[in-house]
Image 1 (cartoon, rainbow, N blue to C red):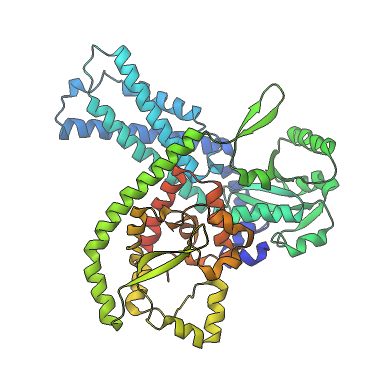
Image 2: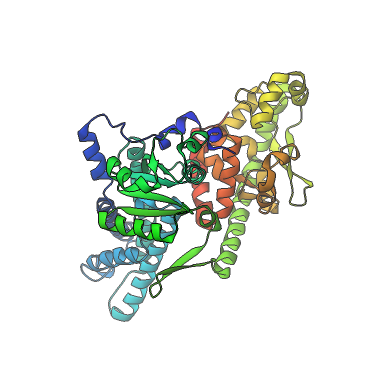
Length: 503
């Protein structure tokens, strides 16, 4: 699959070459806003504001609503000690280490863990040092709740602001890409499916003749030279980050070591990308004696716990969704019946791991003769076979269009989630007719339960191409965690609320 086929016009900004800034002042602002220490200071300031505000709100809640006397809240000025303590804990969780390069589920995980650990630390601290003092446990619980909410909200607000600045050409790291066109295309495709805008690509340095780049997704970036010219290209572009695709070249270890030493002298960051490591989802540690990296899988207990939490989340969401479905079914069923008198539900088929068909229910949104309409219209059938979706599908009924726009047609699926047939979050379901299009990726996609929502739905919904959907599902499987599921569920509510990409 070529990268060119899966890049939509709206996304070409991610791959635009440098030099499009209209003025010198714009370039100065862009470099200032991309300065890593500035990001750390901004995040530190937002954390202090969030924790301080959380304490003020917690005191007000406990004092005015729970009627706890002020003398019993905490020792005088105690919050001045635990606010720096909290920021120190967050620092230990790498909360200020390149926050602009951290994925959102990692942001959520580190923030929640830091707040929880700070909360436990304060409880132990109070038990040891302030046993004789009057101290409100309600205050600690209120502070913990408000701190989780406000800290996560502040950090994700900053991420949203950064994303807006990235898309405007500000806050971006000027990067020079070095390696083979195939590897660089794979690297940029990985950024595309995540909608990541952090890099301002200045150009590429290839390990072979320049004609190779013309057939890949990096062809819109200028080819600046060959590998022996990488330093001149770096100086010409003013890039402060060099991204090297591994294995980059046949030049050998000596060449690579010389590149690292020279970049160290120039104070240029080097990022090493490996396609194998990108999909392995391994943790790593650095051996300080040998300066080598040790890669290891996540602990089994962590995976077991997260799998248990995922199923618990499915049961909770499935139970609530099933109740809502039972309440709304008489109303929506009547509207569907009044339109054409056809059945209320549609049994949507999908492929099980044993390649047999499974089914889950949806409210019917298409005409009863939808299959016949598709068979009669050759052009319509051609469009459908390309994407398995139609932008203005003539088979969809009027009430069906409303149900799809609001995602209400998916409500009966909560019964399948509750039974455990499908999950709340997972790869998209695959129909028998689509099996051949997935090729070697099919077994991996069928190895996990499909989901009612998933990574591709919140990253573009129907606006993504088929190839991108496959890559996004593979990305989800490779990087699954309960934190990623929580983030996808939160984004799903926003997507459904605003109807993003629905038709």
